Length: 419
Image (cartoon, rainbow, N blue to C red; front, side, top):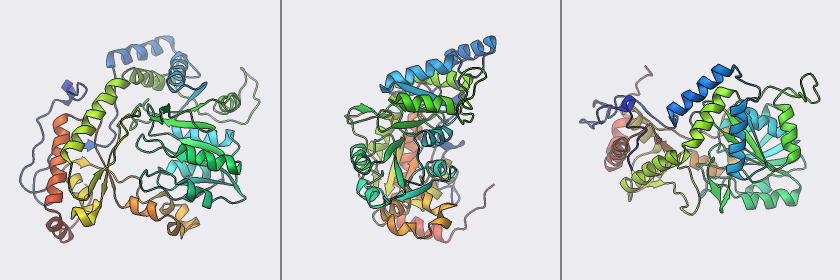
């Protein structure tokens, strides 16, 4: 399908070309402007500007205005839960949820996740305990979770990656048997389902991110979704300083509120969600066709029986078979202005403060450490055109075709310092 978002006048540029040698050596970059992983999807601008003008006219810019309430109601209805509490960002949402759920001591999480998952615990003096992943799904392995449980463990935070649900059933069975709270970081998974049920409806509660890089964005933003009246009531108090009424504070709280401008953008983008999915899926299918049968290059797939947002194009690179390493391919692509990314390199356990706290954690995380060396994310989303995807694929194919020779050239070619 044609990408009407990328075809708008502001995106109208000459199509990229491959000119001679790779740009990392002496050639001209394939793209004049950078292609990002996760450039924001933007919906109907006319509708958005109408809403923004309405906010300015009303002068109600925060504190549970009409667009925040509409946004929360629309999300709760789509997910099929009783409550959605919109927040200023997903990290604050996760921190508040952790506190509202009564977690303390130790909580088991994957290391193969964005650092905020661990920081949200450590910030509250709760120890994140890293468990290994299933190499097939990239998400927590329930057997490895169970092996990490101690008398100090109070909960598990599963992370849905790439819009694919983690092993919800396995984690729930472990949590139930050991009397642990089960929460989910669903930052990647808005609009996605697991076994026919919408992600956002599992465990005690789940957290969505509406950051600009996410499939559905509100610029900055996040939300807790839950079926629990008790947790929802506690979170609503906590995200507004503990106020229960105009001048009555009944609970310890902070400021986690979403503002009206973010909610207006989120609501407008929610109305355009089907278009975003269609563009993302078309890009994903093009990547799949044009990278098919490349040795050592595996594209993470999606279950067609499930709802998905297709926001992530994820390669696993086997350097031995591909003839080129993930890091070398990354270097080549970045010189071409294809800003591919290593997620979640090098793993939370190798970042501070955790590498100081747990210097030998990697011994218990072999699948995590291996995946951190293989994964590469490619650009997608409504800011890309179909021909952009094809040029990225041509670059990857050329790199694999010339792999061993490229590795030798790169080894003897100095890395240019950042501009």
